[in-house]
Image 1 (cartoon, rainbow, N blue to C red):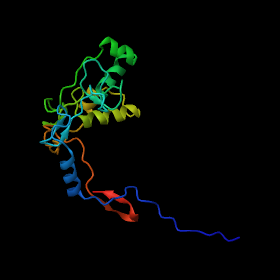
Image 2: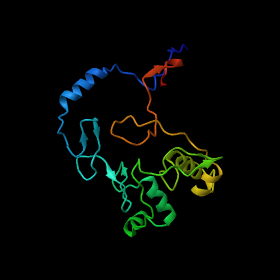
Image 3: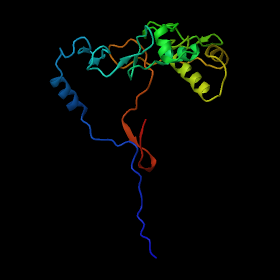
Image 4: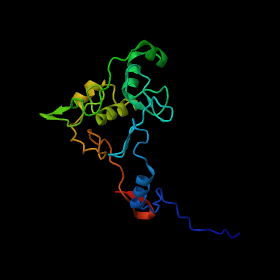
Amino acid sequence: MIVATDTYTPAPKVIALPFDRHAWLAWLMQNTPSNWRPDEWDSEHWLFTGDPEKTETAIWRCDGPGCHVAVLGARSLCHSCEDQLLASGLGQEEFVASGGRSMVRSVPGTRPSCSVERDGVQCAQEASVRGACQAHHGQWRYRVRRGLTSLNLEDWLRAYAEPRPAHLPCRVGACTSGATQRLPCAPTTGSGGTTVAK
């Protein structure tokens, strides 16, 4: 019996398409009226901030009582409210109805520094949840969910968290907060033909 074999080359994970940024920007400028959705569109900074109260906008406010944080689904909770829900021992509907939220998150750019400090060095990022910056809170949540720590957030911050440097400024012109993520740059081809971001 003869079995025919073909060499299999896996497709790259990211396919770089030809993209003319200047042409795309020109098209946007020509086709976006400056008075489009005036309460949401800042034409000077090319910034759209969706209003969750409008049915045309696919974003919602956190279902937590008095919370202003945007979430991606109706009747969803932000991380802060979800933590408080778990700590309350209530069901979500009961938590929302009772006004059981004990802490309201502040708007970015107005928050105090993260509470983590080691040898006189303070974490340079803004506090986001219960005195922790977004990165430290995420590290703690990861460990709790995987059973790697039984410490509460405050004790874990004191025992293990290391100060982090300040964020780079946000690249959005109208934003006063620091960047919380680095987006991939132009893709390049790595070994094996896989496209990777630098």
